[in-house]
Length: 215
Figure 1 (cartoon, rainbow, N blue to C red):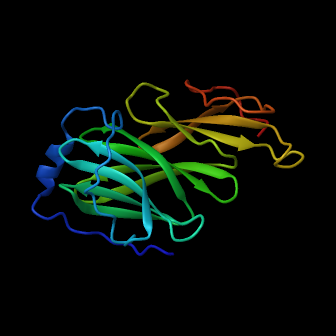
Figure 2 (figure 1 turned 120 degrees about the horizontal axis):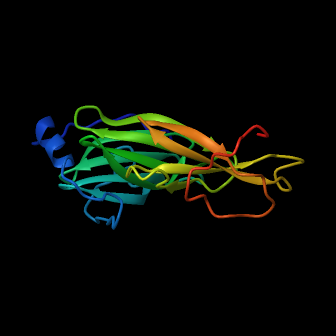
Figure 3 (figure 1 turned 90 degrees about the vertical axis):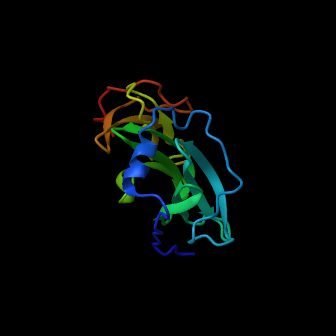
């Protein structure tokens, strides 16, 4: 299923009103709730399942939907205001997992993790804007499962830890390691890598600054 790109107009709410709605201080993502009344985006019809939903200030929601009609179906992000779809973003060959948001000025900067391919996971950064809708600005990918959203630098916006495999001698036997990325002006910037290890370990809770020269 290939999602067509669809944007719907925000009925009855001007850009200034939407900006004001997003400028009220709160902690998005923390204690996020699900709403049974939110409609699926137009791309989905009845073939999608809602994977996550974040409740933001003033009846704004950010949700991730996944095509459930086929294994490994594509995904679509939906930005709601007043219970109606304001904008959508299709994600081909990506199966969304979770999301978190934080303030960037008077807008919401959101990060979304996803599965892709046989083993890969990744994360993308988006900004929710009144006129432009969902603006994607950065996308980073790991070749092993485990992409994790973290607060690594304390600025309130989500950062990312990615899991990578050395693929030596092969994927099944190869050591794996973590990379940490800080979100900076909409881009995920890599700070460093942990040492390769056999077995698993939790995602880092602080930026890693060890060299990635062996990668």
